[in-house]
Length: 170
Image (cartoon, rainbow, N blue to C red):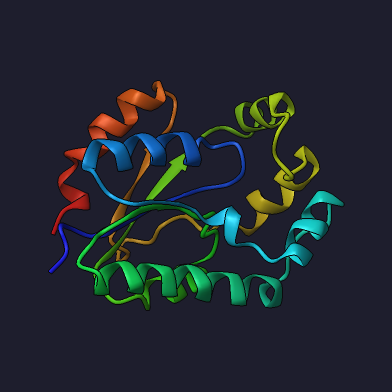
């Protein structure tokens, strides 16, 4: 038995997924995964070159993330992880993991996202891909477990609020 659901912090590049997810994982005492670390080299090369990923590019990556969550469940742990999870079909793959999977969509206005991306120095995702990510994004539907939050508060405040959010507990 795990200590709760897997929490997938999702959204487009620059939404604060990694910062919020790390803080949330620490607050809940759960393993953390930065799903970008699981991208194959070819995916990273495409994104670095400003080429949007296709569904075929994302498929193996999403299955790897799903399998990581399943391994955590089998070890008796829930987790916190980041994944853009832009489309319902991508989230369907992640929901295929053993255990309960809930999504936290961090939403921000496009101009805030663009400013954050422009300020980043140590990430492969260029600002030029923001428009394609926003065009691909399908917000959480009413039948998907989780919540959408406007990610305007400081990350520590967001993580603290999410740690006790009833939409994210069984």
